[in-house]
Image (cartoon, rainbow, N blue to C red; front, side):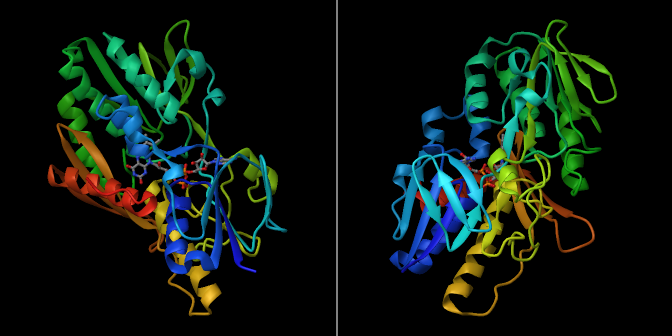
Length: 382
Ligand SMILES: Cc1cc2nc3c(=O)[nH]c(=O)nc-3n(C[C@H](O)[C@H](O)[C@H](O)COP(=O)(O)OP(=O)(O)OC[C@H]3O[C@@H](n4cnc5c(N)ncnc54)[C@H](O)[C@@H]3O)c2cc1C
């Protein structure tokens, strides 16, 4: 009997893990990769599509293109997980796993913010971001709020990047003078672990007349009066609201007992990413390991879990512990990209290093994307 590894979720974490295991074992190990969607979309592509820099079809990478030894991709929704028995019920099939990896990411809950559904927009889901591509060209004047609605959210630079890209977009359309841009964030600075990155973003905001509202969340929208209500009760008028919805643990994960509740990310061993259940791992946004929620960290976690599985099956020495570090690219507008490297777990607090915005980093970011597509989907880099 071949060892069966079942991977739930084909995002950054699931795709990286599956690729490494297939490269290592080929057909000797059975890998089942399950996702409810038919295609992968990079988080950063949502901004590219929203601002008209990429066509929606170019941003979607169909899972049917995954052809790897030992790997079967199944498009299906995971309905229940029994971590003790390592049993997974998907829409059409039930799986018993020798090793189970939960990489289901973070769910978005726009309805948790009163008025957001129907009265505002969100740009974190594929549907939300792609829909804004058609809405933004019709925006002519008035205040825009880019507002975060929950404390824990993916890709902390994304709201700031959105403000800077929106500035360029409105300048190009000749509408910037008729508009105001504000960013509402629950942090004191845009990227708390890296004062240099924060300073560079705040300088770019000051340069472009973008207002940064710190230490605040948007708690509700009143679409009738067109105001956003912040955590301290302050009201801010908006004509266009671009929201980061509340993030929560996927319900199927809560019901499995892997997480305590909708906001208690799955506890894991910080070194191995193993959950409290033997042979069950949680990688990426779904876990509570203490890094930011970003693709690079999901990918790093997947590498550690893959190395652990390889060592277990081959009987080798234990792999190195998870370091919880990684680099995120930051869109600064004006055709430039910066980079911040953050180490979350080595020291008493997260430490970030900033690489200033440049055109060279635009190419590096493009390579980051194309190299993943090559590795995960076998696409030839352009
Ligand atoms: C606007 C924006 C910009 C971003 N930019 C960056 C960036 O520049 N760099 C970066 O590193 N990160 C970025 N991110 C964050 C990044 O996209 C996520 O952190 C990353 O995708 C997390 O990887 P993951 O594997 O944990 O989860 P995901 O990639 O979210 O994958 C989870 C998968 O599980 C599937 N799933 C969920 N529930 C079920 C179910 N019940 N049954 C079956 N399948 C299910 C989902 O369909 C999904 O494919 C950005 C995010 C956004 C929103």
